Amino acid sequence: MPTFAYPFFLILLLLVPAAGWWYWKKGFKKEATLKFSDLSPWRPTFKVRLMEVLPLFRLLAFTALIIAMARPLLLFKKEEVKGEGIDIFLVMDVSNSMLAEDLLPNRLEACKEVAEAFVKKRRFDRIGVTIFSGEAFTQCPITTDHRVVTEFLAGLRTDLFEEQGTAIGMGLASSVNRLKDSQAKSKVIVLLTDGDNNAGYIPPLTAAELARKYGIRVYTIGVGTDGFAKMPFMQRANGEMVYRNVRVEINEELLNEIANMTGGRYFRAKSTEVLQEVYEAIDELEKTEIEITTISRTAEAFYPFVEMALAFLLLEWLATNLFMRRLP
Image (tube, rainbow, N blue to C red; front, side):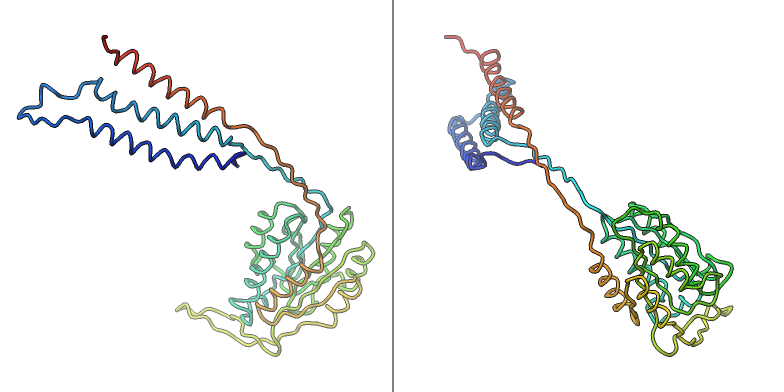
């Protein structure tokens, strides 16, 4: 990044247009006032054209010298980041019920969008993604490459599993297995679901007990309104979508117990706006301790301008003494 050691010298640049105007007026006054019917014998020669350019060489040399006097510097900044980040796993429910439209455009799309914004805020943390429906698997291993994480989140769909259901315990246990050997100062799981555990062979509280054993904090989020929610059921031949109302069956007692067992918190998100507030609250609760040291270094950059000034002055001297010499 360029800067100047003595920027006050730059005010002298205001003299450049004034000098240019003076040279122009001086040359204008020297123009002949006689009129001729035919100017072909007096067409401007190379020397005449060169004489018109000579003041330009002086102005350019003057400009370069002023900039050199201001002493331009190249400023280099380097940030050294020291500290301990947090290892975070996002555990996302991708069962068919996540297509319900009580959050717009539907639960899954709203959760993906808010989760992506959360990931972008956590600059110094390692983040992974586990998804679950009737079973569970790690969609994105834990990484500091947040671009990869957001790409995986953007690609989440409800048809990634053949077996449907809500295997909360499997999703939680899969993430615990990924985090148990982490050396991070803090290990966190954010588990999001819109239902009750009804699939998988690992009970959710067993998985929560494992999380507590390995010092992993679990924040749980229940997504959905109260009562019933509109959900796409089938598409007719004419392309029209048929909807049906399905009951919202979030096991808040279970999600609360998982959070309390592990030192986390349970949140209920009944709208996209509340879901954003939930992730912002988790972001505040899990602050990453980072120390940033900025190292500045400068390099002199006035030499090229001195060389330019000398080059223009040399060009003027050569033009004057080689091409425009006058006999005594």
